[in-house]
Image 1: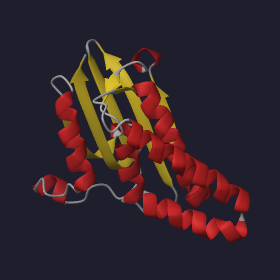
Image 2 (image 1 turned 90 degrees about the horizontal axis):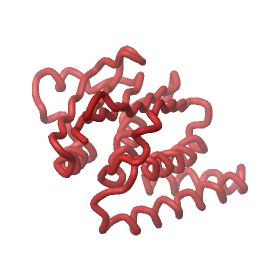
Image 3 (image 1 turned 90 degrees about the vertical axis):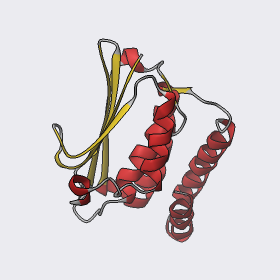
Image 4 (image 1 turned 45 degrees about the horizontal axis):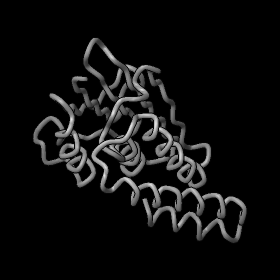
Length: 179
């Protein structure tokens, strides 16, 4: 994220200095946030969503209309406690591992069923590929970090698939846990 953001700022300095300035300020806010929460075990979902939206502003400057992200967050979930940057990492993974030639759609959902919460991030990109079905070694650093973070949640489970009810094909990650 850091290097992509700096490259975006570098290219915008000459073509759109005001946008470069905005991206620089959003990057500074994200870096400040990541330093502030480094010692926290949990933040609210509401705070996480704000961080994701700041991150997306940086990526929108880079990809413009080729990136579309929708949020469906149940109001009663906004005060849930999550490990910091877990949602941002899922969204960043969706952006990092996909092509933007036809545009990228990302769908973020958080809902509560009974006493179990689900967080879903799906995209219409290339998916996890054949490795998903044959082995669990398809996971890069980002997904491995997320798996270690969810151990802080009560009875948490993470599932990976190449299908979402909302977007059809592409990568789909669902984290569910008891509250």
